Image (tube, rainbow, N blue to C red; front, side):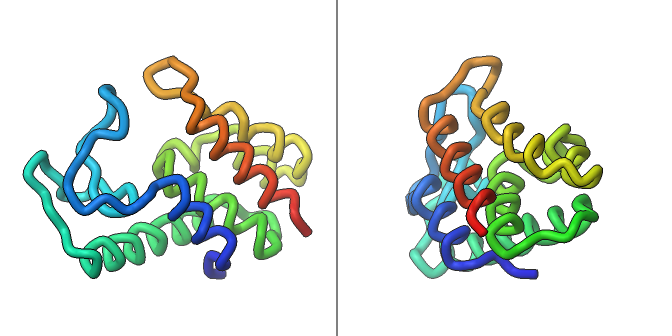
Length: 143
């Protein structure tokens, strides 16, 4: 399965394209493009085409992550919301999450409620992550 347009727009909206390396928060890692961190250093500068290519690679990695860890049958919106989550928190955290366990046990309502738990960085709640998790949860709940 592939991410749908709503899921991709969600990622783009929250990641926003920046062509010069930055740290989203002081506790974060160097980031460029649409939230890409692979090979990014303090001096990284990309073209729009490089940012788009990195987004495609990163989304493909997140799609593979969801397919690898989720055994439950998903609709397009559920899958896309999960891809956005995995894109943002990383495959390791996603794969070991209670959200994935609940999905694989067939508890979709419980899994949906788990999105809100992923709104912290270094133990601090971030308003942007709270908004993103709610948008992902809403997409997940859309039939």
